[in-house]
Length: 126
Image (cartoon, rainbow, N blue to C red; front, top):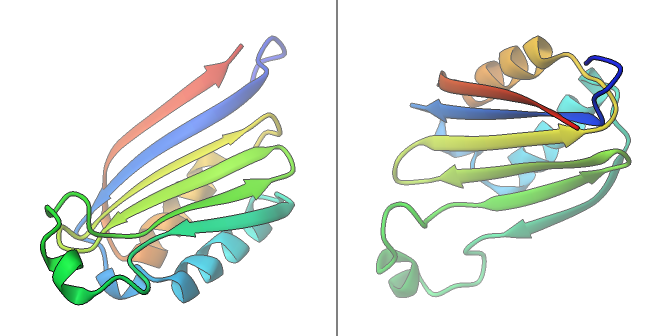
């Protein structure tokens, strides 16, 4: 990150992921391990998913909506993840004003979810 930047965001799209990782327990583990690897201090974690929703309501949802979304607030901003159960996709955004190694993020995320990274965008925020 150059000296004029306020922060940095990485946006990662992964396909062909292991949908067994698309649950609160595994996502908590992902956030904990990722934050340790990139030296980020975790704060609040919030989920939106289908826990407690009747099966018939979940089955009626379009493919692009069924999954888990989570926001892991970190001291320097946030990490947001969206998983799509029926499509085996993960969409990840990490924004922080503290620098981090995006190669570590990419490699760890690919290995954790067992998927293929198909798109990466990095943005310096000013």
